[in-house]
Length: 333
Image 1 (cartoon, helix red, strand yellow):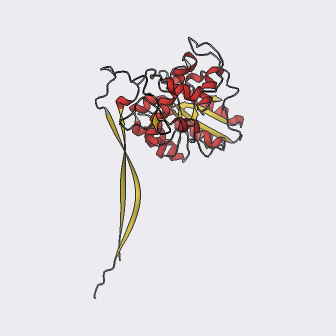
Image 2 (cartoon, one colour):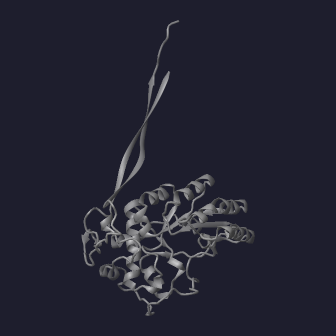
Image 3 (cartoon, one colour):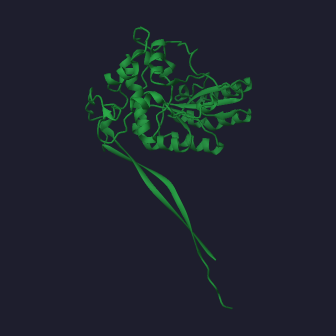
């Protein structure tokens, strides 16, 4: 009997038109309609915009650790990047899931890697578009940073995140109120690896592992901060994972550590209609299936920022079904 297995793969394509998104590494354009939608009926504290990040922000009201003392949420900031696939490989080797707080500008550069993160079952959170300290931005600018990042994440993964992390941990009551109006949950950390600070001093990077050893010995729950945008931090992913696992912690995503089974069910963003790019309405927002604003048109890309191609096609393969063909051969002896 000859058994032939046939697997048929259906390929779906996610296409991004790059000119429909803000310029990378710059503050994105604001949209007053977005501000009106989110802040209508919301009391925002009257606090002046800062000229620099707050040195020691108050995170008493933010999510900074897991409720269960044996849980440890591992998080990686600032990606995706060319280093992220290695982190995914190392996480897969240990069969654990982490949370990636991504920068919109980097998602635009590496959309296929964001898709890999999502398809591997890791949680994705918002880390703004330009990684600008939020207390230095106006309310309009804060909303633009978060909406544009949520939009490109949703365009690639089909999901709008419910969790976010402020660049540099920079936050005050005004910023927190704006974020809350968007249905987003602020995630801080209680374990900072400072791994990125050793990028230019690799001889001192053993301090990363030493910190994890000390934290694991405390037997307290943790949300740890690492990065997936440079070689030195990635070089310490294996050892830090092993330290946490050997200490008998359960490694979880942020949502898992707080018992949230729907980390992408953000009713506020979905009600506002985070638009799925399709070549139309690049700067408007959809409410009740109608474009309510196309104000603040996209800035023209400068030659240095312009990509070689205006579109990216990301292929998603889904195994649709398998067929078994059976053939019986009779041999006469």
